Amino acid sequence: MTQAQALTTEGMASYYGDRFNGRRTASGERFDQGELTAAHRTLEFGTRVLVTNKVNGRSVEVTINDRGPYVHGRSIDLSKEAARELGMLGRGVAPVELRVLEFGGSDASGSKDLAVAQAQRLLIDLF
Image 1 (cartoon, rainbow, N blue to C red):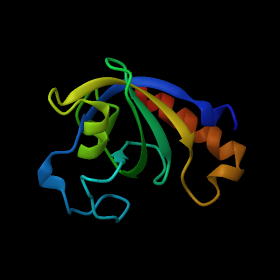
Image 2 (cartoon, rainbow, N blue to C red):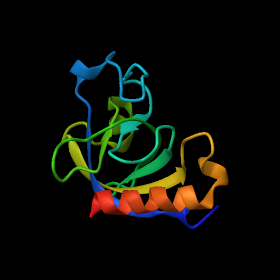
Image 3 (cartoon, rainbow, N blue to C red):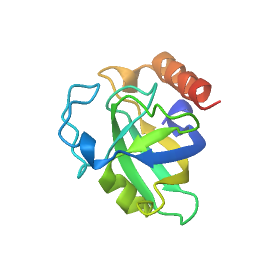
Image 4 (tube, rainbow, N blue to C red):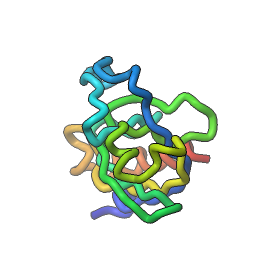
């Protein structure tokens, strides 16, 4: 595992409302609120991220398949199922830790330069 793949950051998570279920995501997939997926502004589609709720310590692994969130101060939008596993449905938002497990894209896992560039984009996005 490269240093970029072990990248960990903190931010605020929210989750998609029911009205988005079945709509197309930016990746072209249909959004399914029962799947473990998420939206991020810069991470490549297919990137796997471990999201940990800093309030209760619960974690879930999600796959990035959409763009967003478009609300200031939010780092990631989760599917309803991912939010349920994190125990954040009642409140709607939660402070989280994001840890990139594997970058998406067909050649991302074999390219250190691409992994570093994606890590830099993530840091810029969060700060």
